[in-house]
Every structure is written in structure tokens, then in C-alpha cells.
Image 1 (cartoon, rainbow, N blue to C red):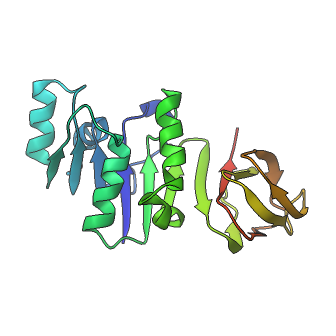
Image 2 (image 1 turned 30 degrees about the horizontal axis):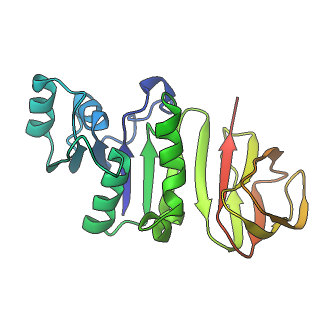
Length: 214
């Protein structure tokens, strides 16, 4: 099962034609994301958040048009995105979660969405989590040998050790890398595919991979 999660980032950062082919998909909305889904004519399978930025009329609209609503306190340890992910992991047998609206706007929110995959319980599901915006696709990988498929509209490829990483190797990208250790996070930016696929491997740590376009 593939689940789409819309969170509250700026609408201008959404991928183009986000809902054109996905209105029938299973959607979850986190806080402002739930309201935006409802306004698109989508009834979320789950809406979650403190809804502190919503008016009474907007809250009523979300509650009336969501299959399930879970409210949270405004003062909490988890972000709305993290709360949504926890419930998704608990309630659905999902093979992949596509997150939209997680970038742009406030940098602290973006960094929270990026770094949450490094801690429990999110770390055990990190390879199922994808972040999308109009310029980027972000994925996360555990140690091993991995193959990437080039997205048709993307030109650039970046490898970002989010932790200490050992023996990172890029086999057939434009700029190759022999087994190299990294002791701290770094962005190996502006690489590119040579063909339609790319291979990389590493032996420990967490690596973020971004396909992007200008």
C-alpha cells in the first residue's frame, strides 16, 4: 500500500499537477495539509494535528470531511508530520509513504522533517519515506548496495551522508567515488546519472539521496 501524506508547507512548493492523477489515492493530512486536501475535494483517510492555525469554520470542514480525525495538543514533543507518520506506521501496512508539503517555508520545520528518519521509531521505516516538492525527490537509505532509477524530469543527483558513513562508493555516476568514509554530514552535490540507473553502496550510517532540477 502506498500512502500520500500532505503536510503544511507552502502550496507553491508542491509538485506540478499534484492531484491530477492522485485524487483516488489514499491520503493522510497533517494539520494544515488536511484542510488543503479537503479543499481539493479529497476526504483524507486520516487527519491529524493540533489545528492551532485553523479557524473554527476550517476545523469544522476538516472534521466533517475526514474519515478519521486525531487531535493533538499544541505543546507536544513531536511535529505534526511525525505524529502523522507514527499513526500511519501503526494503522496501515504501507510499503511507501510519499510526503508532500514538507519543504519550503520555515527551515526548522524542513530540518525536522529531514532529520526525523535518524531516530526511533522513524529510523526503522526510513527507506519507505519519500519527500517530494516541485524541484526535488528525497530518499533515505540504510547500508547496502542500492540501485537508483533516473526520474525523467530530473537532471541532478546528490548523495548526502546524514551521519558518519563508511565506505561510500559511487560506481557509475558522472562523478565516481571510491570507498570513502565521512565523519560528519556533507552534501556531495551536483552529480548526474550517466544512463537511466545509478549504483552506490556504503557499509554503515544513513545516506540521503536527492534527485533534483532547476
